Every structure is written in C-alpha cells, then in structure tokens.
Length: 324
Image 1: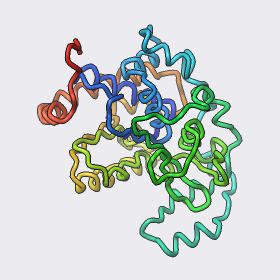
Image 2: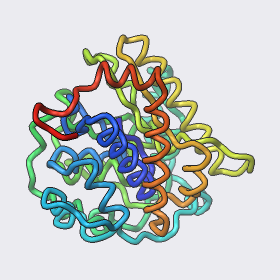
Image 3: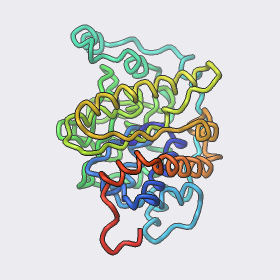
Image 4: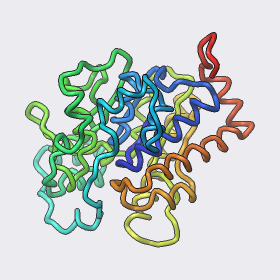
C-alpha cells in the first residue's frame, strides 16, 4: 500500500522501499498486488515497469543510476518536476461547487459509506493546472498497457465522492496514464481528470492510503507506507490537522485489515522525517534528506526484533544466487 503525499511523499516511498530491499533482500517489484494512491500510484507504476526500489532512491538523491535504473530518466526525467508551492488555505478561498443529485442521494441511501470530507474535497473549485502537462511520467506511459502483475490505482469520482479503483477487476476501464493522473489530481490544485464521461480527483481525498480495499484479498502480509500519517506536531494549524486525520484513517484501516487476517506492518514518518518533509508536499528542495531520513528510520524500525522476525518470516528473500 503506497499512500498519498505529493513529490515529498514519493521520496519517502523511495527511502522506505530501498531500506526494505537493502536490509531484508526483498524486492518490492515482486509484491502480489500494489495499491497506489496519488504519489503512490506513480511509485507503484515505476515498480511495475521494472524500476528497482534502490534506483528510485538513487534518482531522488541524484546519485548515479545503474543500467536498470536508466529507465527512470526516460520516464520521469533527471529530477523531480517543479510545482508551485502548495498552500492548503488557497484551496478554501474559492467557492466550492454545490453537490449534485447523485451525491445527495448517495448520502441519504448509504450514509455508512458516505464520507463528507471526501465529498467536500471533490466539490472544491477545480484547479487550473493540467497534471498530465506537468508530469513527464504521464506523457511517457501514455499508450502503455497495464502491467501484468496487479496494480490498483485509487481515485475519487467527483459526481458522488465515491472511491474508484482502476486496475481492479470490478473497476472501470481506463488508460494507465489517465488513471495515474486522476489519482494524483489534488482537488483545487490540479484540474479534475476526465475518463470517459466521468471526472475524477485525487484518491487521497477518500483516504491517504485506501488500505482497507485489500480486506478481501487472501494475503499473508500487507505493508502500508503512509507518508501523510506523520505526527501532528505542536502547532495547531491546518497541516497538523491533515496529518492527524491521515493518521486516524490509517489506524482505522489497519484495524479493519488485521481483522480480515493478514499481518500488517505500517511505515509512517516519525518526527525527524516530518521535520525534513515539511508542510509543502510539492517542494523538491530537500528530497535527498527525505530519502536519507526515511531510509535510516525504516532500517531502524525493521531491525526491531519483533518486526524483523515478522518481515523475515513473511517476505520472500532474495532469489537463489543473489548477493542481496
């Protein structure tokens, strides 16, 4: 499970996954299913097209890439894209759209499934930036088929605030690059993405991780990487509220997952990582530090005897003959 978190969250993914690869000899590309939300959808796509986790980290810190990692330059270019600073308050200054009949009807008929916050985010005045124009990765995967191994990409349908899972058997058909664009279309910051006769926004509007969608899968282990679930900090501002909400939702989803049977390991930023990550999740000036901090913190967490025992027991090791 690769959660939302913008450019900064992608670097957090890279550090975490590289640590698991380095310390445990596990290749994240071999996961039975990868679920990506927003930034996690890009990381998931890169893993599924064959980019190793170690190369994701090397690219983020601008270290030399191996021959296997050169694919990263072809897909995303030499460095992270430059975005305007993200200010959550800016999204609230423009009047939102009024809910349509389908959203109201869903709230009335299925109140236990309806998420008011997801609906409110779906109704935010659309941003003016076209995400497909600003992400080289989307242009490079345009026309590519979905990977053979399962990749589920989460977005939110604007008309009713319902979560949509592209790539799953019961999900709507969509080109890979548009599914990723929809999952990354931060409400109010990017323009919604049209697929067929529907428009979609960022899957993080429904949940920063969407982890509970794996409840019906027969899995032994689920690893949840949740960049937005870091500590709220001492300042009672909107960013602290976002992190508190993300952490609360992740905990609820993990409880639901564990009740369904699998062992769940959650990796989320601690205070040191959060200090480096900051509040602007579109910023790219400290990505190398984010990778380093998340790599070290994940290594320390995975070295705890109980966690290491679980991961060693349930994760496949390196292939025979490997030096990993």
